[in-house]
Amino acid sequence: MEKREFLKVGLLGIGALAIARKVKALEYYPNPSDKKWAVLYATWCGSSRDVGVWISEGMGGIANVFDVRENMDLTGYDHLVVGGSIRNGKVSPLLQEYLEKNRDWMNDKIRGLFAVCGNMQRPVGPQQIDAFINFHLAKLCGVTDVPSKVFLGRMTFGLLEPEIRPRMEELTNGEEYDHLKREDCLAFGKEILKIAG
Image 1 (cartoon, rainbow, N blue to C red):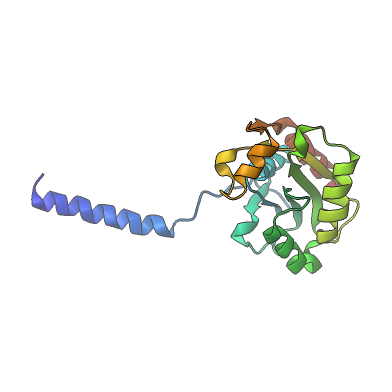
Image 2: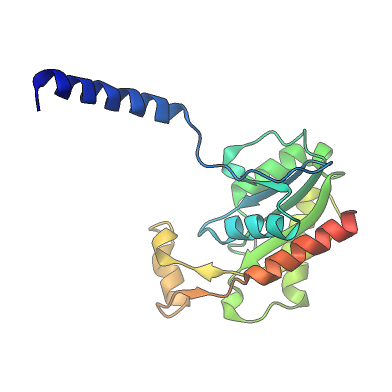
């Protein structure tokens, strides 16, 4: 390769990197709707991210889906669905802080709540719905009587923080699992949309 050609390729590569830094991460773009919907989630292993996207799919793909770490301004949305992964009986501290800070304007817009938990790989029952939704997430959001669902999640050791991984491996006898069902999330999205009208 000639020196001139080498310099051209190098400059083009540097320019491409500079442009790429300005581009945001891939965003989920919703289908058109007469109302603006958003799903806000917090996750550790990606389960709640998938639940959020699948809930939107169940709603016909009309909701934009946001990770709470994006710290998005959701005041322009008409309807919100909020949820997250459960660890030690609670959603992430970041989601808790976001909900407490924004509760005054959010509570009238929340149309659904969800939680994702391992539940020791046992079926979800009324106890988990009370603990994770009614007595925790609903209180953080300041809402009652909205559709809610607790989903069984998955365990992916490679996505855990290094300090948490040994404890989770011990709890699951060193076995990863995946009990998350897309069809359950789609059905919940349809339920929310039907009730919210």
